[in-house]
Length: 127
Length: 287
Picture 1 (cartoon, one colour):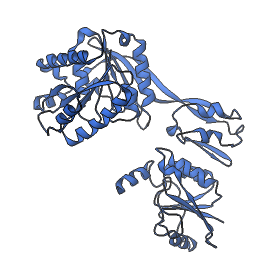
Picture 2 (cartoon, helix red, strand yellow; picture 1 turned 90 degrees about the horizontal axis):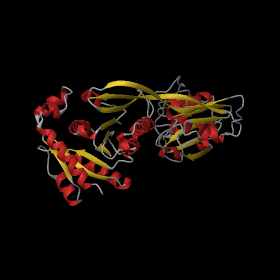
Picture 3 (tube, helix red, strand yellow; picture 1 turned 120 degrees about the vertical axis):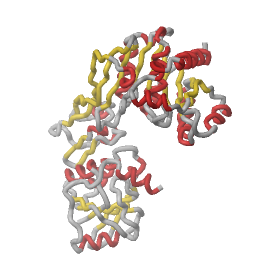
Picture 4 (cartoon, chains in turn purple, cyan; picture 1 turned 30 degrees about the horizontal axis):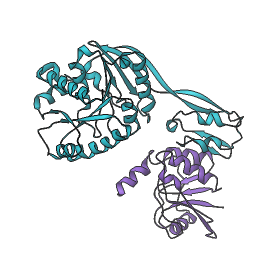
């Protein structure tokens, strides 16, 4: 079984990216073996529809769960339709988020927790 | 002829300039287009009688899930990511769709039909001899451009626009994005309204860049000219941009504005100022 985690870097010691649609990388990992693949997310540059594109991308990766900070309505709808569970509120290092997930420290959410364009505003605020 | 009023920065006085210019040159035969469709407000001052309302839609895809084989071509061509193709399902996000029709054209299975979705309305009427057209984008819609296109199409069909003697005044949206370009496109002249503040100058410079790209002649109106600093003046001087008019920072003007009364209705001396501005613009145009 594989899970997907939004990350600011391309390895397990990177920070979890709080944004789904506009995260820097998706880390697709087997939580038991910690074997992983890092996928650069080009949707970060999209003016709109980043969540849709990112959602499609992870849907092709056969993950069962997505761990991220926040998720918008479009992305959530895609993950839900693809049968992928969504977990929000993940933070810290990717490795730590996996540990917490394995211990059952997260619960899948029933809907999006932020509005469209959250990731754009988040990026602007950081500047 | 077609004169658009734009600004870069919001709240500098585009509508004030547009409305008062339109009211100052009645003998020209004026057409007024409020293209600031996200918040049209010229009607507050012109109080037009609306005679016709037209619904404006864009075509959005509808997927026949029976015919679809989930090949993903539609999502691949969609530049706005309005379609998501999952292994056993296609999702459509109508609010992201720009209505280009590419997906239905390219679908190898013929599984996509188009369905109209209303994004707003165009209202046509008259106000004291002025032909008035405005667009109202539905709340929550993200795309003003198709609506602005319809306003201009309606205006063109009514004929005044092609008559060199008459004047089509376009109140453009603020900013420098697609909607502004759609509103300004085809203008003989563009009036950039700014204020003598750092923000006013910053956004004026952006707007000037846009107009240079569009190759539209332009000049500047400095509103609230008695406040702020001289940097807008210096910028215009250095770049040989004509200053068409200065409107002072005047309590009376602000009061009239707050009551929805055009300046020239109560302060007749301004009629001459706007008429002179019109003459100046006429001189600046290539003959």
